[in-house]
Amino acid sequence: TGLFNSQIPHGNASLLLRRVKVQDKGRYKCYTTLIQSVIMEMTDEMVTCSSHNIYPIPQVTWATDPPSAQESLESSTTKTTDHKGLFTVESMLRILGNVANYTYFCSVISADKTQIWTASRKNQEDITQEEGYALSIPCIAPHSLQNFSLTWTFDSSSEPIVILRYDNRTRHTFNLWEGQAEVDQDLLLLGDGSLLLLKPDSEEHSGTYTCTFSGLQSRHIVQTRVNITVASISETDSHRYNGTGLAEGGHHKGLNTTSSCIIGHHGAECNRQPPQSDAQDELLRKENTCGRE
Image 1 (cartoon, helix red, strand yellow):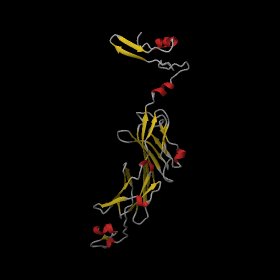
Image 2 (cartoon, rainbow, N blue to C red):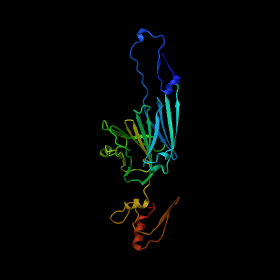
Image 3 (cartoon, rainbow, N blue to C red):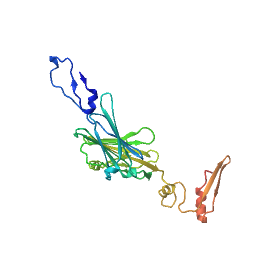
Image 4 (cartoon, rainbow, N blue to C red):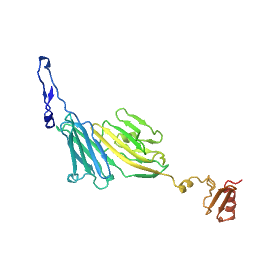
């Protein structure tokens, strides 16, 4: 048997049988490869869309949300073939304006128009919030999905880890951060896969979060960088005052008094500015022993 390799890129996938015999009789079927997946990558300046091992040559189209004029979506597409005659297509599109304002859609369409595989991607604006307060990281599917899976990954510095996965077909949920993060399954069925961090911590939860909706011949990715800051001292102290106006750590609410201690070989020496009243001075004298008996 043999193929006409030079003719395959032009759509001729005929099979050549040499020295045929009676035993060769039967039904022969020819299959062309389907579009298996579309991969999208994004930088601050460029969006790249690629698909591999396709035959015949597919078509690549671009779109955005909010919509953009087609003439503004100037892309460059390259097509290469391997030793089997299968094609790889790669298309690059320059970012329009602020990358966080657009969702980019790339569709790879089979030559016979019977199959369309669409990928979309959005890089959201960074989120900064103080630790200890609940935080919602948005992720909305761009269109209605029937059978889909949702995956959240987290990357701080090492390899990304899967922190949550939900399968719409089985209704099964895997949550590595149980008690720390969750999604609302009722909203999820409506296409809202936003992740709620219940009590984010500056060290454990600062990093890049990636949300991926995977459906039939479609994939939607939303990426967000989150920075959880350490709680400010003033706000922390405001939660520590008891009913008498004293802080749990021995600081008095409302006093304009500063004190400092130097620890040396002969013990601690303290220096503080005079308080506003004798009563306050007596109170501080008892509190600010600075470690001396």
